[in-house]
Image 1: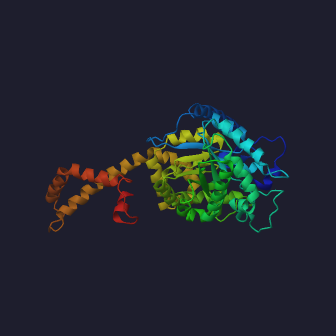
Image 2: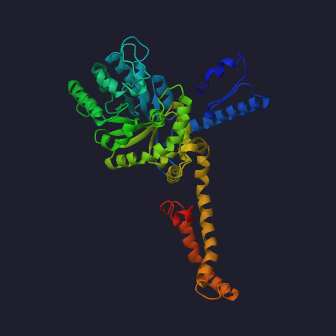
Image 3: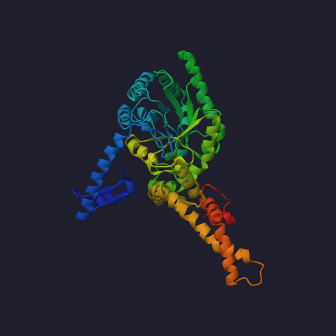
Length: 446
């Protein structure tokens, strides 16, 4: 999807031939014949590639080194659920329930919500479903829910804060979700969390409703990490939830100092993309905490298929738009998780985030040929060590550059060439041996 073109769209005459490249944010208003032919060739190649990806999409997804990565779909209705299943999604990682509440004069009833959630559950045919509680308010106003004016509504009464302000709406939605069968396939996700008390309040309400409905087992409840506050206190949130879900659509722009949906949305997304690596790598601690406590963490976003860094910092579950599932599965199968981790840490160490867009187009090549580059560095080190070792053997002798003595020193070096080569390969194989940034060994490795 290509958005944010501004008033320039009004200058395009009706019937004009256009070339749209949404992947790279380009629109050609007066393409040449060669450009049109090239675009048609790319479209045909994409159709062929898409058919190949869909043919393999129903198989479980494993990275090149055998690590299992699950790929789910973000959904909004039952039609999208059917598309997701056809494309090989392993379930619903995010059901946007606010679409039931928006664009109408009254709130949906409990029964209406239950029927919608049950239809989607049936369409998923036993696959798991994560239902996000209504994320309304802010940039998603409701006609029947008047809210006071705020200078920055995106950071005001929104998400779980709206739910807690209207317990009647929260009660109807929770009851509808708890009634879905089979019980246990549906899990709840709380949006826009900023403190643990919000989770506790939702959990307590849910427990009371379970007693009313005579349901014994507790339902799994997770929290969206989509505010800086939630990212900072993720370790404490883990004590109250069963899983975490990182919402990059909101977290990235807010982290970059922009509100979602602002008039500078394109600029915000570019700045957010440049900070994406740093956010992901800083989130490594959250994922380590999840692993220590037995919790699971997933990432939800529009375009994670162009981000390989997620795999390098511990995410093993992704949720994407239904149409992207086959492509991202194919991409993951071409990756090595250890190489992804190395790339993510390298991005953070060298502040590559400012060139994030370019990195995304080259990262797969780096991952595929990174091992060859490492081996090249490994060979360079012993070659450099040979003359240096020869000089060191002659240090302290009066005739340092005596060629006869140098030849003898050279013989000594070549006698131990195997040992020197092994040391050089060991040190030069970057990623297997680490060193503090800025230290002599760090410079040798790089």
